[in-house]
Length: 96
Image 1 (cartoon, one colour):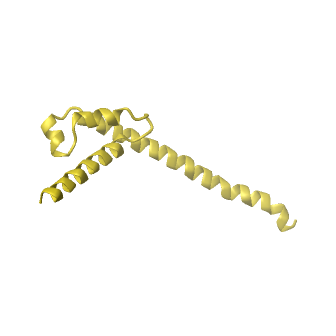
Image 2 (spheres, helix red, strand yellow):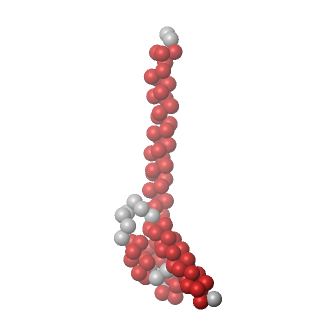
């Protein structure tokens, strides 16, 4: 046999781990999103004062819950809180 005969088999062998890795990463990502969504629902049990301490409001929770199931609502909440902090700091700079 020549090397040419082994080429298709070696290509198939190297492609399988890459496909398995992609599937594994997808499953892990979905699992993390599911865990974060469960944690997100616990935020709804907090009082308004507790939410304000971490820089969120009830309206922020409503915005984040409208995301599709596979996406992570905590990422959206993080961006909302970061934008709010940046705008507050900008206002403080203008006043000072």
